[in-house]
Image (cartoon, rainbow over all chains, first blue to last red; front, side, top):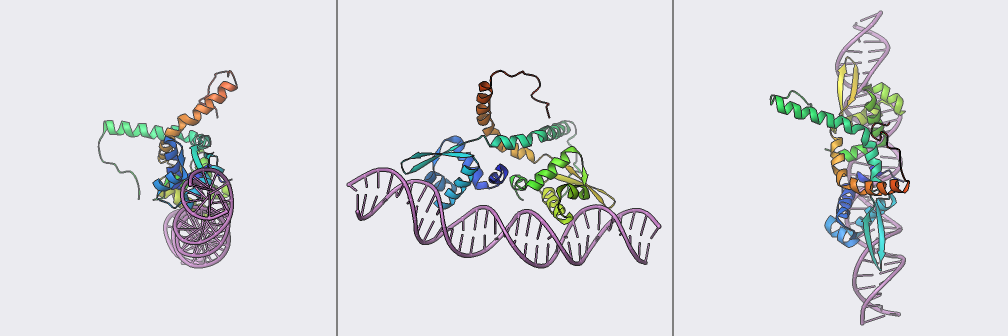
Length: 109
Length: 109
DNA sequence: CAGCTATATTCCCGCAAGGTTATGTAACGA
DNA sequence: TCGTTACATAACCTTGCGGGAATATAGCTG
């Protein structure tokens, strides 16, 4: 059982979820939008299914894939203790931009 | 630039961030806690550095690694449109569990 | 039944990610 | 200066993943 984070690391899979956020979709529809081959799409859908992030509804030969957002709560839970930190620094940035629009000797690369 | 999601897909790297959430740490300290070799730890730290998730402070031969939570906002932003969905089902669960003594659902941890 | 449609599964390939060992580098102490 | 500490980088190996092509499967339609 791959962790939810692992599943979401794949950009294609995040795009699938984004598409399913609007409405349920057929595999063929997703395949077209993603620009993948049909087996490629099915593979990603399988991963999403096993992670509990999507659910299938059968309709003859068709498969309607729909979102199942519950596992995302796991991500949110992990994120929770960090949230106050970056929102704090964001506030600090805002204050800084308000007061002194000066040079910024920050940041490496 | 590897996306933040990719960087977080690694369980070890999430553990590193969790450790840095408490306080800045030295590489040796992290190595010990993670049960990895020192080069292994350094490799993960490099990935985290390049993703902007940690920052280094030099202190003679030592390196204090500290958290830089800003990139996590990216994750939070992606998550945002989904949040109402699972919180809806969570609310349903709460209703099913009946009344809850509403003390402090925010600061508990 | 045959043939078509929609999707899943299998097989193979190339590559990149994690892990380890070995080595390089910078700063300290004696 | 020498040795040691603390960390980074390099080289190597192995494994797993994402991609495509080919094939299997299930359900229509006629």
